[in-house]
Length: 502
Image (cartoon, rainbow, N blue to C red):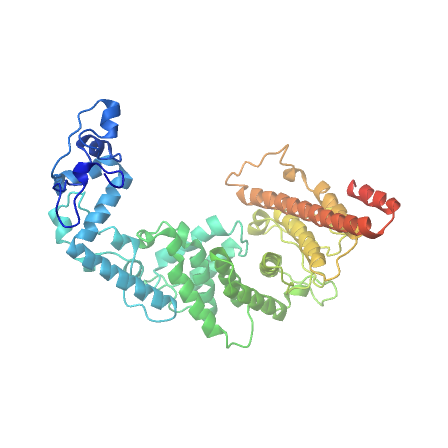
């Protein structure tokens, strides 16, 4: 015996000796899917279980039909695996997969700026033949050219019904967290700009095309229009985003800035940030900042400016364009730890009022944002404007001041961080009763859903600020303790321990 194998399993190198025995597991081990030691005449498993041990000389190949039936009955995941293996074994289906691979390569070339020749959509993938399913003659007779795809479902032009559906979806789902437009007046503006034809944007200006396509790119995922039914919600924005980018590229050569142009760039930048934190979003934010300064939005409520606007509703729309630009700059700079494009102190713009008051054209006296650290909470208490979004912007401004302080090469002393902690604490104590979530739990009803979002966002900002201050203070204390242990006297070490307990 050699290598621990039984004698009946051995053969000589020259073909002499005992005849070779097939190296197959016994029937009992094969049925239980366990490893057989193939010891003759009874394997180890059968000897322990007192089962009959039979070594077949030839294993019967199972029929394909029975295998498919067992695979289909095993469960959803096993059925998909069996279907995929059968798909690879079929030459016709392998050719179909090769065609899909070619279409995928065309998709990648189109994303790099080349012309896309074919389309690969989720609707067409659904029609890959499934051997586990029973196909009807009508399904077999349907040609592949009739399969729907995003390009076939959505025409190049935008019908009027689809445009209005996307506008309504924007005000229902996007306006609550991106409050840019006065809904009644914007609908009147669209009624004059859009054509009630199959191409509603045919006679619209480039600024309006940029604005509407950017708006449609944000609201397309919430649309209930049949034109977008067969497209995945997350993929519906691509056609509108590309159209908005074309209009944006055509407008880069214009000399004068308009509010519509700025609003279109703002929506396009928000759409870029909703996908990922990328360079185009950062660059678009810079464009929005320059346009806002060109339009004079930074001093729209300066008391030294000559004349006052008679239409407070229109002036509020200009203010909101500034604050959305300010939010884009604040968000991008905080996330990337880069300097702000908008100066944190040199602007005079009133905080936005509530949408309910704005849509009803009710005049509410607001006040500019107090940019200093010690006046941010005192000025807010005296203001008539107590909207949730205004308080959110106050908290966000204090957070931006904190991160501006942290970006300095020479960090401040412990007293300066105490000033920041005091400012955040005073702001928290000044919040109106609607922000006391322990006593007034946010209901997130349709009427106050947007306000609940601003309330929760404000508390998240405060938590972020407190944790940042505590972390920086702890690091400074550890560094001071390390240097004190090396060079200072015991009296100074006691002082450091006292600071750590504050």
